[in-house]
Length: 117
Image (spheres, rainbow, N blue to C red):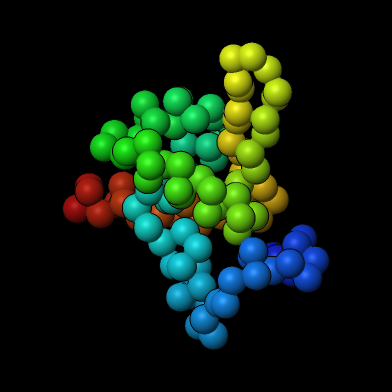
């Protein structure tokens, strides 16, 4: 079992009040459509902001920015700023985000199975 507290120390998930139910906690952290799709896109390699915007059909800049900020605060993703001109920023999964890989992969498997029925 993955121990989030061990990886965050005492700063559990940006000090948010989390529900008692672990399923609801997971849904609160990654349960919206865009967060799951952002995670899917950075699952295997880091992506730049505009890359994510192009890959996520229908997302607005504001919604992308808000979701990236929230996932960074929740320690699911890492924002790496290269301090270059023009600015270069990449987003990748943190160790907590990496622990979501089996969940995302199972969701993909389930979705593929459902489509084939």
